[in-house]
Image (cartoon, rainbow, N blue to C red; front, side, top):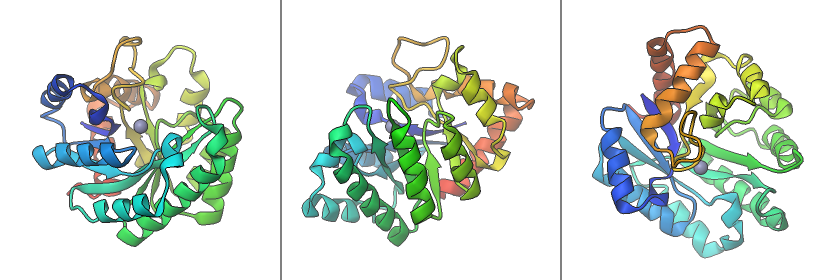
Amino acid sequence: MTDTHCHLDHMAPAEAEAAIAASAHFKAVVTVGTDPVRNRRALAFAEAHAHIFAAVGLHPTEAHLLSPELEADLAHLATHPRVRAIGESGLDYYWTPETRGAQLRALGFQHRLALERGLPLILHVRSRDGLAELELADWLEQHRPPRFVLHAFGGHPRLLEVGLRLGGYFSLAGPLTYRKNEALRRAVQAIPLERLLVETDAPFLPPEPHRGQRSQPAMVRLTLARLAELRGLGLEEMERITDQNARVLFALG
Ligand SMILES: [Zn+2]
């Protein structure tokens, strides 16, 4: 079992320790930093636990923090051996449409850093009207990052088409299990098995039947089970496939 995207640093210390203990048998858990302070906390978890790996980046809602100093800090953190991805980066016009320019600059910087370090890029996208999704699809076509994952993929048709064409990975989170998400479940049928990943985005996006609670990496099993059912595979087979995909994308060894 692998949780390819969570935020242990968004949990209280006792909550994080319990979440880590409950996932101790996992192949891997990737905890994702979103700003300079949280990047360091993500790295501390990855240094302390063999099954935890870190991603460092600047979340699009934090793009107003972008500065030459922050870029230098990120470039420094990215050399740490427990860092297996850059991000999460991307475009968020749901919470912070006013920083669009800074978000695009932060995305460009993180793309270049990922290229330089030979690391995959973790992409977040969110908007009310689909504009961020369309712009991210255009950005992908222009910049063609060699290794990227659309985290908590929501099923946007143009992102699906571009992501597939460019060989990207699609990571599915709790919403795959929500009753009113037929469109996402249909989109997932179009993704080749070797491009599928699962995640929790913990402590956010809890899968059914935990909606309304805080999620944790161990809940990834529920999303995995739904994915296996959708694709007509056994749970263990889908687990083997998504573990292998995560190992390849994040060089988990
Ligand atoms: Zn996230």
